[in-house]
Length: 161
Image (cartoon, helix red, strand yellow):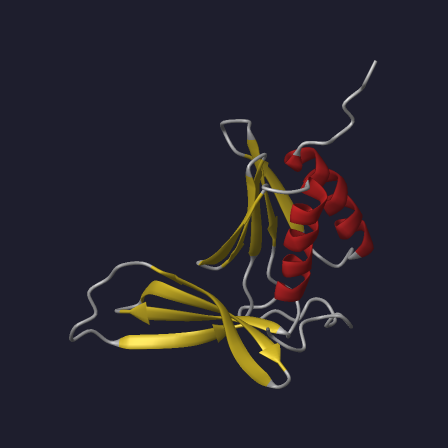
């Protein structure tokens, strides 16, 4: 008899994030179940006004990592361990000074977010998320959001391909 011991993406995430939060006890995290009961959400709260919450939305198909409006979809097309590891590495980096989000707004309404990584002293754009908006003759502003809750990883990105 063969017993399937492979964990679902949600189960793998719950197991790994509990270890992550035990290791980094200074992080304030809030869990919530999404009403459909087929997904969960974890919010790691920002510590200062210049920072941003990191939100992980997890279903058995994907993990979406949000940083303000910027977000990354990590699809469960391969091993669940790999997807969870990628999500946790991104989450860790978003909680350091090695990553930031630039939020653009028109008439005080955010419409674009750029997720950037510091690579050898230069900020390089990883992800751009944008809403459609009319900006003709409107006042435009941008602000930089950055966390500093965890130290930069030794093996953080130092070069881009």
